[in-house]
Length: 83
Image (cartoon, rainbow, N blue to C red):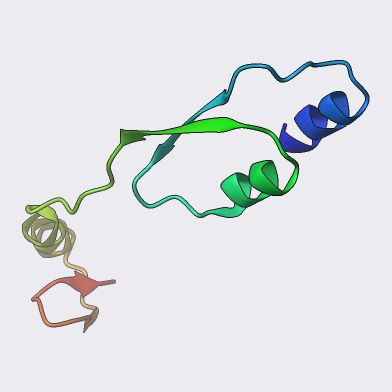
């Protein structure tokens, strides 16, 4: 999609007058922003969502392993196991 946008802008098919709305997450990579900036395409970055840790993940995974009888190796500092 970015390539298509860049091609259209380069060939005058899309005049860029207003900044492109760029919704993204808090853990985004800067690849798209770099490409837009290098191409001279103005953009407005909006953090539309955040990636956060699920505080119950370890408990939930432990419960799944316990009910499925999975005997795996311990990973990390928590009691979470992987089958």
